[in-house]
Amino acid sequence: MSRATVRKALEELMARRVVERRHGAGTFVRRPAVAQPLMATSFGDDMRRRGLEPSSRLLWWDTVVADTELAGRLEMPGGEAVLRVCRVRLADGEPMTLETLHAPAERVPGLTGEDLEGAASYYDILVTRFGRRIRSGTQSVAPVVLEAHEADLLGVPPGDAALRFVRTSRDQHGEVVERVESLARGDRYLIEMDIMPPRDGAEPVSSGAMP
Image (cartoon, rainbow, N blue to C red; front, side, top):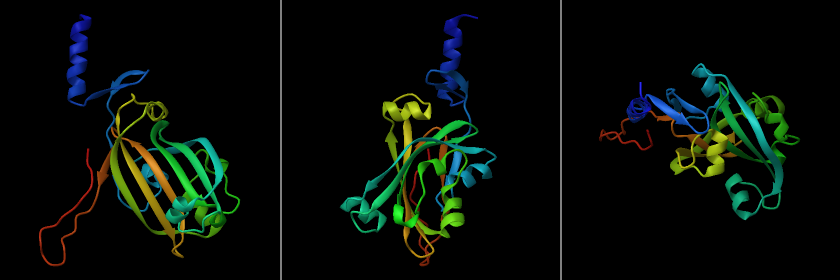
């Protein structure tokens, strides 16, 4: 079989989203997108529910002094310390999201980036070490295009589409315990939401994104 025939067949399979090209690796059968519900659940719990094994690769972590903008987002006094942790979150060893966590250091005293390496869950640590449970929060989702260094960390070509999640979560005391910014691969995430009819009997309305 000629190379031209093989190339044409692969292009047709890519157009039908049966296969995908992975930067620097080759062409592979496309894996199904992971459904992401808009609910307060950890990455690890979400992946396990879908039969995938979660893990994390720590990229860096530090502690910074909160300026006015960051302090406002975390609902804390300005000038206090904030823990920042940047990780690649994986499922079955495959990069899924690039995540940066911000947490008021005073609310998670002694926590470091090394504590969140591997399969460690921030939500589990909140409960076991600090007696804090996630009770509410807000989350936004927007489509973005990956820059070269982001795409490299996620194992996809530069310029690929992604979903940007920004989540702020509060514990049982109403205190903000995390602000997380995540870049999720657009080829592996599907947004799910429940649609509820309004009380006045009008047509149900929902908003969100579904690739």
